[in-house]
Length: 489
Image (tube, rainbow, N blue to C red):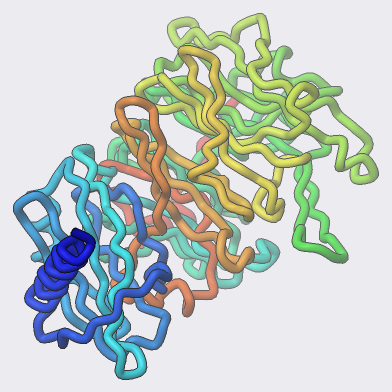
């Protein structure tokens, strides 16, 4: 009986071996099954990916001279052969992923290393039925954030590898450019700040560019961090007196903190700033405001003022909210605390509400409001219906994870992460299914899988959009040089 069982197992093993040989032809039949994971970069193992994403090209780092990758669904499959770089045909990739929406695919990698053919353990790709928005904008900048001699805002088509420059500081007298953000993930409603004598907030609304001076006498500075009201008529901003500081040692190279800050709403149709004493208290620092999906609330971060920089480690922000009446253009008269810095022993920044109104993403660090050099910075997700907070363990890394944005369908979010080398921020995408389960994120794919290793720039504020913007770097230059700045009162 034992002999028969051994023969049966041997027969099954032989059949499986033959299947490998046939499926991977011309790979020879002396393939060795190995236990170690596929030595690939970027790490695309066991992730959920949208059916409209560009090919997930990767490189085998184990010294492969030849390789064969097969991706198998229920009825369809895709096979690619190569060497250490595994690059898919864009046309075949797109056609294949459209056929396998909603399926969990099995990915098998066989590689020739030092004259040995090795078959690694297979992994999976879940092809989500919901797409990700087709475009992402980001700021490319040196990771030190104190140098901007070559700073650009770029827009990437996520369905392929097309990328274009939408603003270039070399065209605007070398001045700094900040934070390109969208309203309702719409390329026809966005804004960015341009510094310098001819600068201002560049508003892109319905394809028309305007240059605005978003400040009045009750604000401590011009507008800094902001977000659009869903109507498009209003935008909420912080005004901040920002001080940079540099650490002498450790991983936290640069620290940025406010010595004064408050909130203001810009009425983009009547050129006025709306300020409330509730969110402009001298002994409280308020920053990072964002509207709820229905526009009835403003979420923001608030901290009691402490002696700075001496007490910087005691500077901890809570997550707060205040009502807003868009019909009257009025702030509410009560502030609610949703996440207490004292209770959770941390500091919140950058809240962002999902477009369907169900969730709020934010980041938590040990202290302060500049998390990119805090390696402990992690994303959190608040369920606005239940009050439950997800620690997002599957998403976070041992480095800074922050500067996130939602897709228009609330099924995807993008964020910047310094995982890997701890120095350069890269754009990642993560999926949330209909049950609220969050999947392992993956880095934005590039045509050349070695791209990130050779690019000495950080991706700052990756923002998703379902349409491209209607302007380019030349149009931004023209507005900077020629447009008269509109003053708000």
